[in-house]
Length: 221
Image (cartoon, rainbow, N blue to C red):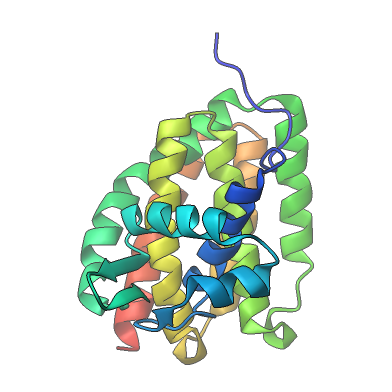
């Protein structure tokens, strides 16, 4: 029997997990710019977390291609390369529909209510007057909520990794993008479709959402 988490939010995190999550967010939101050197001592101080969990976090982030370490040179944020977009999209266009459909099929009542509530919050956003960084955080919340609702940790981990890489591209070009209102409205339809158990519909919408994202980025590069 498949069990679905009662809450969409992740469980309480250890110190090491908190360091990982906070450094990861700085990297994917480009608060740590691409190719920037990373000083674990500075990070430790700014996060209020010891160097050991920070170093552990950086090792984990290497496996996600968010940081890279060079002997005798140090650790750096990875670059953001538009040529990676096709590779990232190829994976997402196949797996995002699986996560959306699965969420629609297996999510419990509590999770469906949370997804519906999130849709209401997204729909209420004043997209034109909302800071772009804030919009990106809503985007992250939507996708992470769907992945968690799918109740497949392996699928969730894979999609988190590639959505994080896609988000770095999104952040890099977001100021050039138009029709963000359309992107946001797709989130609302997707969340409500999952909450209503519309597996076929959300699977197709998730596929179109990824394709539309790739086209939008290519149009401004």
